[in-house]
Image (cartoon, rainbow, N blue to C red; front, side, top):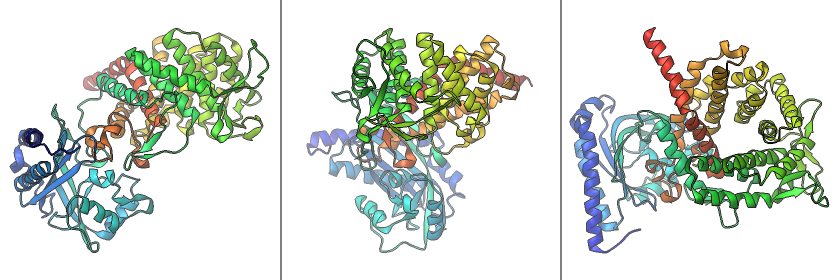
Length: 580
């Protein structure tokens, strides 16, 4: 929020100056602007240098001030002068300040630019663009994607959108696109006054702070902030604020009771770590909302175990996956709190799953109409199969009743028979991990490992953050550790690429931070404070939805829980390689 009080503005100017000094020192620690010029001279391909200072008050989209020159030093001084003038005139608090100085630049035809955009996923063109050779109409990557300058869905860049952004920056607008543009990368740093962070210069990590090693401390930090973000989305009635597209802060319409339940599950996992009373209060409110959406098949049977379904009332549906996630979440809650409050409800929801289970082949009927409970869809999504099997195994752990375990095993036989590893499904991993706690047979253990092993290369190289992949890996690691520690018979073990497996877990854990609401990312969105500390899906307009946050939290929770064993195994591989 801008102010006009001269004393406050003087404080803001002092704050800005300190941050600019810290940022300049960061370049100096890396050899200074002279070294930067020498190292980047060839990569600049004769282009002018440009520097950019992004200033954000936390509450509104960052303003980007810029300067150009024949050297990095000249460009830097020009950008700093522009930033000082902007803060002095606008009265904007410079809470976050980010600096970018060009280190690579090349001319390409406008046609080539459109080809590159057409090949990019939404919000995945990760370079700056200047529409003139003098860098007077240059836009950095963060503001291009954070302001939706590119029309990704139509695979093009439109003059009206570019001019809207140029005008907002106080730059001259274009009458037409030039035949050639300059694409560029920057050496960048970010400061919030408390520290300064070097950022990745290019590629899909572009603009994110560099972390030397992803460890349990990093995992815990993101779990805590994302869980706080999620618990603050729980309303007085226990219903979550479903989500929004943060570029323009557009609310996502509709609701999904299955995602509601799974989001509670991640809050329970967070509660296990923090024992925070507010978190528990939000969990209990959200559970109450879910329970209010359950439906008894036989309403006139008081005191008798019933068959219960979780209803998606707005869509007139009952989903087997909805019952399954409710069971998974409620059993987690009871285990975390020592309560038995929902034991009967879990069994009744389990009865609902069993009514949709075909004992002849181990399949599930996926969707019924509500409230008639007439058949609707035999198949909706492969996820429901893994969710339901996981829930059945959980019910066995809760009750000791063999009917749940037998059904889970029969479903797992179908996974093996029909090659479910092809789906790269995290719910299948959860199901096999839970099933083998009670039924550690070779065929189930081997399939659980295969589900990860045959997909390692695809998972490692996935360009999106794809949060469920890390869930799949870490849950499988839990099962793998049990095989080793208990000496369980598993014929697939000799085929299992354990070193690649562990390497992929660490790689994905770090790479997934490209979907974390770091301030250097969210400062270019409409309301940065609303997005900080959560998780987003970049290729869907930075979508922030409750289930996205849930999956990120679930993945990092599993990583955190298994970190000690992961480190031990990783170190053993490193030692063997060194000795070899």
